[in-house]
Image 1 (cartoon, rainbow, N blue to C red):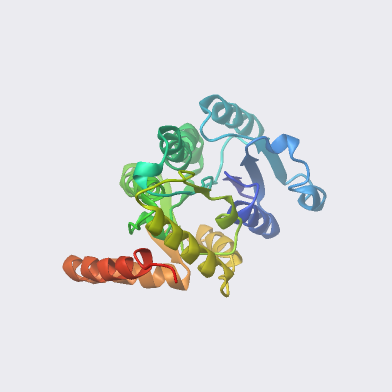
Image 2 (cartoon, rainbow, N blue to C red):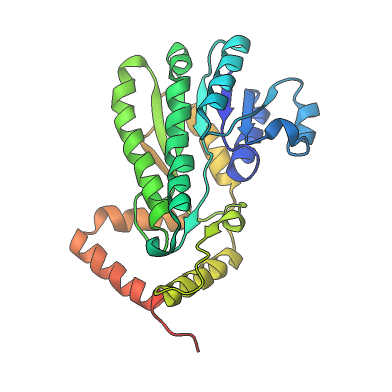
Length: 281
């Protein structure tokens, strides 16, 4: 039986991942902010999985909370086999319109949260020669207007993971980047949008928000594709460097990686102009 720790397990991909590993027969340590007080989240799983679900409160930006969870895991299990760094959120809007505290918190959660948890749990992962899955995004390998800070946080996770892959290989720890496109989770409804009312970027911002709304109402990609995919990856002997999920992300990945830069950016400039600078009728 494997021991799996999932951050941001309170909803979206995180909860689905926890359920997938529980159904497989693993022990899951589900973590999230104030999770111990939120008894409704895993109400059915608590009774169904006979002690294989451990619910622990952990804010990934709070080093002391991460260390407390590490101590509890060490005392109860002595190791973890799989770490899934899923905790994160999106901050969207023009850079000039974002508040300094919003900018810093985006990086604190998405990047430094991943750093905090990975660093503190590495001794236990070395013991088990474990596996780490770090959540990135389609916006982790391609920039996009009105998402500069979210992209920056995910680009940082990509650099961290690629570097750690070689750093930890001699110690038996494997890493994999998870790069999903758009899926029907609560991510879209929990976005933080710039709240600046008067802005030089008002047209671009409005058009992007409208585009985001239109995309979210189309036939969605099912998030279970990602949670079940990670479970299947975890059973492999060797992890790939990255795994892209979703038709939109796969198409974007092909464009970004196989077109010459001059063609790619020329094409994207035309797309950006069409999307962001059109006047409403």
